[in-house]
Length: 93
Image (cartoon, rainbow, N blue to C red; front, side, top):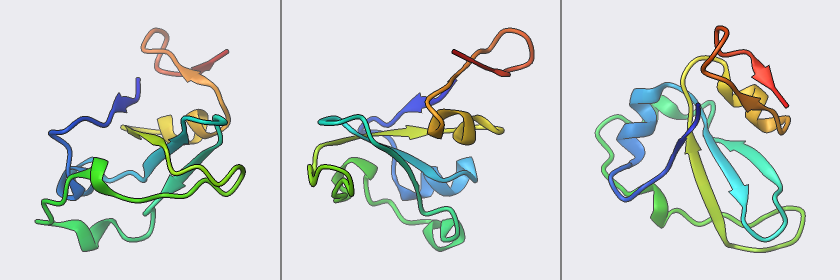
């Protein structure tokens, strides 16, 4: 299951997960993946993830919540599916 971003997560954490950051607008629910091609740049960077600024391309809100992923969870999350830890972690509705 995706891990919600908390105060203990920083850009180096994102590097460690080796997956893009899931960004979800708390105003309209729009979802996107960020930093997929830049993860190597974050090694050793201790900037807290919650301090990053994002603007929703759907509604313009700046309120967001973040998610960290393992395996292939990011693609299922982006499509609005829930990844189940039962049955091999396949997406469920």
